[in-house]
Image (tube, rainbow, N blue to C red; front, side, top):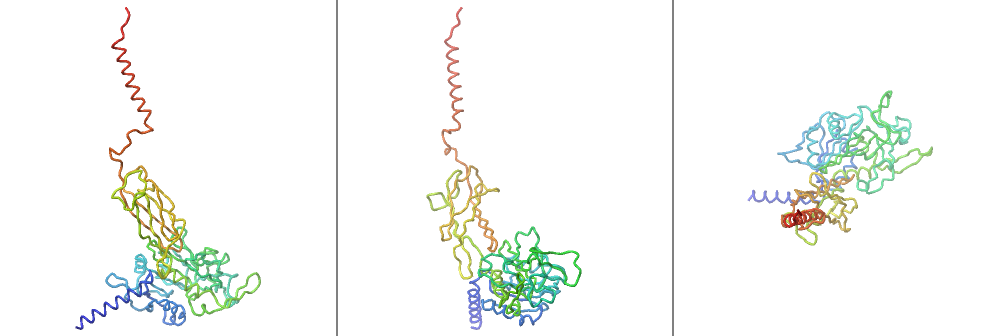
Length: 435
């Protein structure tokens, strides 16, 4: 009886957990690694917003042991690393990279003092933080609270935040406060982009040391960056732990613009952080292809094998996760490739305003195993990769045209030869030479 009751209870808990996490693609279980317990207090508004979004947070300090993975299964869906200066983490940098490789999300926060594990993870993701002891500095765009200081409390103008509505659907009108380390993104990094960058007057350096060489400066100074992996995992890198603090969430901002002081009652940090984490944890911007169909024009069922030069029709439904449900995704730049090693047909798909994309084309005069391929990559959206294979055969011997227009010269030469042979034979047989 106890076994039955325990099994039933386990089944109910399992079903409830599955239902509670079904409303988000990235999952709701979050492991939070803190540098110290005090961060739970100094960053309480940030964690409260996550809990209000129905995330289950599991807090641990960097010195504690954590069951990150059990019997090959990950115990968490998302990872927050708020331990910038920690020399050791409960998990290795390799484990975090494997966590990302299997489609999970990470929020990594650095600082002026950056530990080796955090630096190794970011470096492997092509985000290079500056040396220890450096700050992002701007002598023209700083908060009034740092007027007599080192000007490392930067007021980041919203125009230097990536203008992408899928990441920030709500417009950020106030500057965000940033105090931390700057980073550089490697130029060949197609998957990494800057979410918030410095102004042309921003640079990264140690405030009290003589500057001999800059690690990064100007618009290349990445304050917050993001990795959008091909498996749809998302990793957000921030050089400032204070960016997510209660102090900066509630703080007013005063900057000097054109010689005049401009005041804001509240910084844009809270709205910036909330939207950034929603996107980073895959609450929106995930695409999927469903109901892929292909068949001959005028038919509804795909044949087992196509024949060259047949007219075919291809259709697919593309959906977008908006945080609550899958809705039709509408765009005018979705392309289809019909390829065998190289694409033989490349065409733009047209949608019907309900998320269904379709096109028609003729199969090329080449036979083999072809692939219908959609590879759609746009910043802010997950990678959409749809592949459907189908064989294509040549004509059978009785399917070729009896007479080909382009071969009429050859037909004429053959008949002219027959006529010439007949004339020659007749002349040879019936012509007599006169004596």
